[in-house]
Structure formats: C-alpha cells, structure tokens
Image (cartoon, rainbow, N blue to C red; front, top):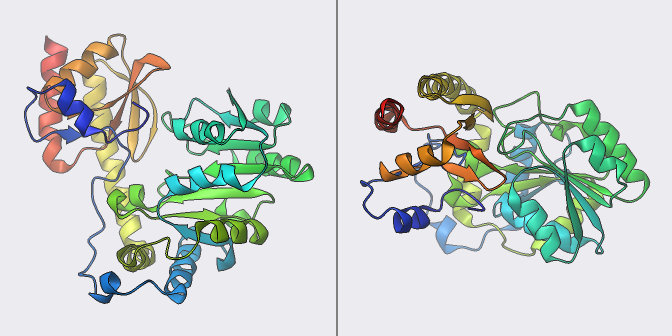
Length: 330
C-alpha cells in the first residue's frame, strides 16, 4: 500500500465485505467544497493563460504569499513531486521520514541517490543536494518548527541545494506553513484536493522563489490544468469563511474519532485535522476486522502496530463506531 484510496485492492482482498465501503485510507476532507455549476466554456474552451494567472493570484492570497509570481498551479501536488527530480542534475537527496513514499520513490526513479533520515538536522548534516520534508508529516503529524526550516533553507542555498517542503496537510494548521516567508532555495507544495475534499479535481500548487517558479512553470507546459479545476479552484480558494468553518467542524470530528479509538483500545499517537494515527498491539488483526466490515484504513510496512484513520463523514461515524465496538468486545 504505497498510498490510500485503493479501494480496488480492498474489494479484491475482501470480496465478502458489505457495500458500500467506507474509505478512511486517505487524508481527504470528508466534506467537499460545495461548488456552483460550472459554465460550459470551462469544458469547451482551452484554458487561457490569464485564467491560470488569476487562479495563482487567488492562491497566493489564500496562502499568504505576497508575490503571486512565486505561485505555480499544477494538476495536483503529485505531478509536482514527480516533476522536481527532473529539474536538477542527479545528486544526493535526504528525505525526512518515514513519510509519504512517493517523495523518495520519485527522486530514485530519476537517478538520484536517496536516503531516509529521522530528523531535519540529520538531513542537513549529511550535506545533500536536496532535503525533502513533509510538514505536518504524513502519517504522524509531526511538525518541524519554522525556525529550523529557515536555517536549513539558508544552509542549502549556500551550496545551490533545495529544500522541498510538502505542506499538503498545512491548510488547517495555520501556524505550520512557511509559504509566506519566501525562504531561499525552497519549494513548498500545497494540495488543494485534500483540504477541499475534491481530490478527483487534481489541483495543487508549488510556491518557490521567482527563478525556481519559472522553471517549474516552464516544465509543466501549456494547458496543464483543466478548465473546471481552474474555475472551482478559484472559487474555493477565495472562500476563506468556508475554510474557517471547516476547521471548526474538523476539530469536533477529530475529538469524536479520538474518543472512539481510545475506547477501542487504541492509543492515538499523532495526526492532523484530516487524519489520526493510532497504535494497537494487535493492529494487524484490527485492520483485517475493519476491512471485513467494509471499512478501509491505512497500514504501514515500516510499523505493523500503527493504523491511520481518515476522518469519517457524519453518515459513516455510526458504522465505524459499531465495527470498533464489536472488535473491542470480541
């Protein structure tokens, strides 16, 4: 399981599980942004360059970036993760982990030497060409202080290196993001789909100093974002009151989910407002039991005692609670 959302695997492995499945294997907001009907020309016309610039300007305001030229829109943050290794010569990359597998995999796939290290300090101490950190981290929600990121960026800039910060889960953790700081040699990735519950729309952003942002924009090429993504993204990113309301609702949902997990014998050991990481001495059995009940959570090869739970919809809470209760009383 390199990523969540793989319900085809779930159904193949557990064909007798009840439908519909509840997919808690991803960290996607269970409440989608309620976008208005899209104008037909978003589908029938090629997106204009000005429409892309307008979206990037709105995104810059939403992320606290003073210069919109630093913001580059793309068809999801994943495509940016895959693109960055192509934009510099093969070198040594340190990824602060364990974390989202695709970061190391993409750098390795393009011929870079990649190592996984425990901390940002250890990563920088090894004098690599690139350091990658996910902040807040996936799957444990660990946060690297802004002062440490600023120091790492300055060190890497001295030797022409890069600091790549994946802020996919930072939208609801306001104090975590450093997008507004304009750190040297730093590329920040933001995910639209997770926050706005619209992962299928495929929209994300890179935030980087001007020279780097232009390199990324040029590598993406023309028409890299669909008309519907441009229209919905612009409307959603401008709706600051929606984000505020979602943060409040998610805090309540997290409190409820944590309570369910603790009552079922789990120890909640990390997470964000979009996922919770829980430990159990028999996590493998819990995973199997939940899957047989049609509930798909995330397990990890590096630690068999942990499971990650996405935030359930209000409709799914009762079914999850019943499944956990049955398992804990078995």
